[in-house]
Length: 275
Image 1 (cartoon, one colour):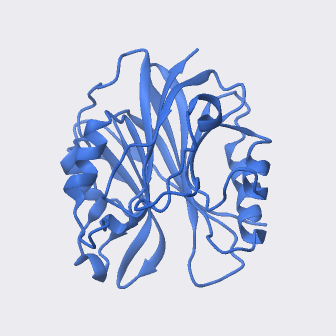
Image 2 (cartoon, one colour):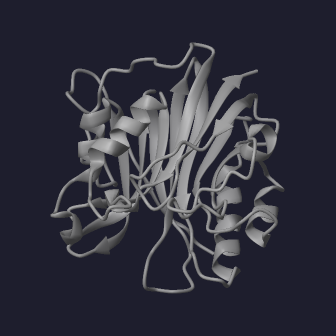
């Protein structure tokens, strides 16, 4: 099994933004600022449904307001459009970077309606490297992938991964994706890994159980209640997760599901600290 990987080289110095080679990037770099206490940082995962809220309107300002209200330092976004017809050819990653003041890395997984469609990460922390890997697909209608960043967080290295895997009832493709995720997440030097995304599987399912062999489910560790994130209008499923590699040197201290009408999913927010 071969995974299509695109590795990026980052150029720093006096440039006004980050130059990433190999990914479609329409985002600027902004000066880091710390909103969480220095001993902690906050992570959000959010399937934004190409910015379309429960009212059927594409409104990025409410997504940005939610990110700022929750004081998120790292945000994993799924279902992100760039230059797509249905969102008027707008560059959603660049707009969200401008609205939040965070650095953005966008990965294109699928060419759609004349544009690009994939995952994005907003970060308050410096990006040391970035790679996007395409999964082996059993169905050819939509390529999926996983975006991997190495970040400098409070004088520590952190691997941050963001993905969105298949929604169909058959687990076969999702389980193949999990095998690839686990291989990509192995860090021989013990660098901690945070894995975020929409996994289209509920607790107790095969995908959830296989991921738990290598990761800890942060909601199970510190969340209270059912943790349902979908559908936003009447939540009854937990399919959006923030995982951490086992014995990672970081620990979750709280987890919550903020209310929002900005997408058909609800976001998940987890606060972490280094041990």
